[in-house]
Image 1 (tube, rainbow, N blue to C red):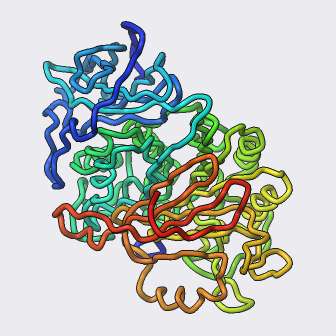
Image 2 (spheres, rainbow, N blue to C red; image 1 turned 120 degrees about the vertical axis):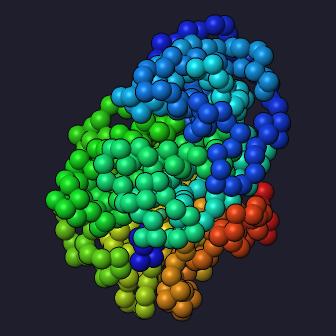
Image 3 (tube, helix red, strand yellow; image 1 turned 30 degrees about the vertical axis):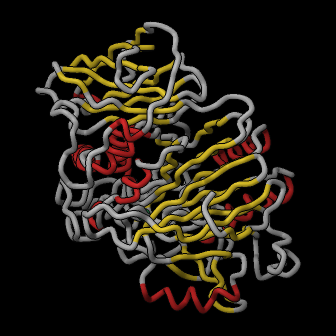
Length: 521
Ligand SMILES: [Fe+2]
């Protein structure tokens, strides 16, 4: 979505084997919603975070505010929330090369366990964080949060705060736009940024990440749940693709290749993501995380790895066939297909950036958001044809980017009766759940009437709520997966506010028909 409204590892020392017990999240004492730096110490002013859980490993992250030189940082993992029973620990170095961020891939953990952790440096200790490893083997029930699009300038991160107070999530799936690149008042004017100008170079991107990481609500959620993240466009610039972006003027704003490299570097420094060797398309974030025999999370990069330039502005007719146009590139598409084909998990959650479902403007006339899958018809057809012919079942697409809430049945052309029966859902190949923004504004008013008018001719779009911010909770069992939308009336006021349940839709294993439910699981 754009502003027009489309929407070290350091040396590690194993101390002893692991064991774990849980303490309530409330015991970790989250502070209240505000711009101010919360209870963290001066040396750990940017908080702590964890991410990318495996059955035996998890990423731990922090950033040390030192005096300019390298800092030795001790990390400890505990099986109690008071930090008295150390099960693992070691030493890492925070240095200027990684902007004094410390990322440790802690291994040797037990599956499906809650752990606590803390960093120590320069005579101070960080707060104690909580994290959880992924299960291995038979798994009956999992709950994930799904979030995206946190425009700091548009308001407060009440969604992060509310999620930090939920008791039973496995992890938070962040589908991108964790930061925004704009300068003050260029896109939202509720809060101001550091730096105040549009971010362009490595120092800018580092400062913007640092600014976000001082938000009390963001710190609160990082403190209690591991994040599983992918980037979307605004971690670089609006409507970015492999070689450019709508919000980048080549030359005037430097070379896009340099800007992208700076953005990606800062992202890897500041986010609790497990890093991989770059591929032919550059920095790589597409990867798989397994949650026992219940869920495989297949994470994609439809943004920067291989995407060719959009076919035009925000909205228009779908582009003419062009075999050179791609959203993911052959390498990543083949990797995704292989992950789906070889998955032994019941559910395959395809976590990615932009909406797959298309929108019919009037009978016989489609309208494409040219930044979404509809703007890349060859890539979209390849994916949907794969679902049709491979025999892979129980694929659920998880989407962000568009700052609005949708539940869609996916079919190549929903207007073709030979492909899809809207009355029964026959022909649907998979379902898609789209999470709204945490704070980024919804679809502009001028499009609301259009969406209402076109509902009857878009029966594959089973649910749409275009305006409100919020998040989705995914409740997963062997038999079904339910997405429940929780939305906020307001994110402009800093006063804490509770979300309201808006809708829930589920799909049964072996089926591709969305069913409305009255209450969240
Ligand atoms: Fe966004």
